[in-house]
Image (cartoon, rainbow, N blue to C red; front, side):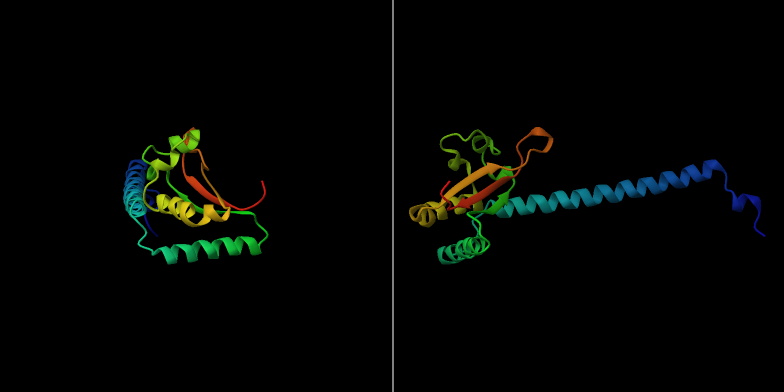
Length: 151
């Protein structure tokens, strides 16, 4: 039969082992957080650049999204969501609905606005860019909605 010290280790030893486990967990959490932050930065970097899609591909994608929404009885559809950091002012002008807010767009969000201007607006479609969440009370992600109803 094992001795009493093996069955019930002393409290100091247990605290030391617990502290090591906590340190390992904290280290793993920090590693994962750093990796996630790196992935997020890479995604934002990619979204600030042009999509690389041709005009024809963009029109086809817009058509597919709109037609699916129409088949589902909708008169509007959110076509994109992006971090406010893709705006040169972090979404402030969009949040305030200031004249010229579209000039703060970069990358793919800017491409979507241009596609709407060139092809959808002349056909009666409307577009709205609006802040759709407020983490910690500050503007967060921006949603892009295309609509075609009578409202």
